Length: 133
Image 1 (tube, rainbow, N blue to C red):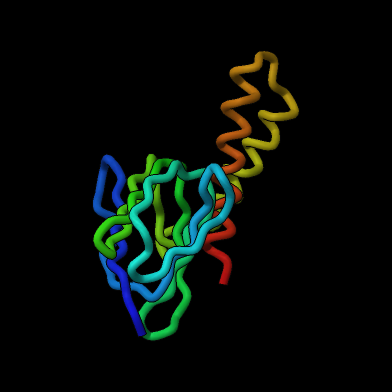
Image 2 (cartoon, rainbow, N blue to C red):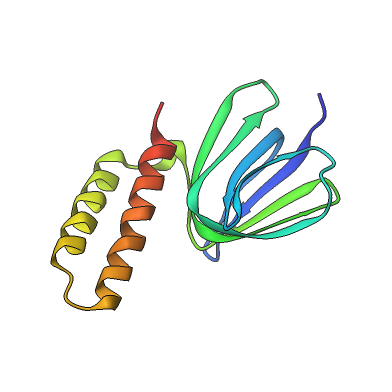
């Protein structure tokens, strides 16, 4: 099976470095799939779930808080504003963040409050989806 190198980075840490069979990620133009030897690519990422297939066939997920991805020389590098592997996500904390964001959406008084709450809700939903078994 062909493989590619996946790197997930944030400003705070190196989240992941591994060889994978494929990567699916949410871009501003929709969801795309990346396989080994994909053409060079630079794309902006939405808040969402990144899914990748390990070489042993196991599917893994990570919650990505937006950013961008670069594919070059059979290496996909994801530069994210935030990123958590599924096994790192505290589901109770994510549910509480979702509840708070939904409440803030109902109670917003200014446009910036609505936007901030909407982004918080998107991040909480991505974290919950990534953590699903």
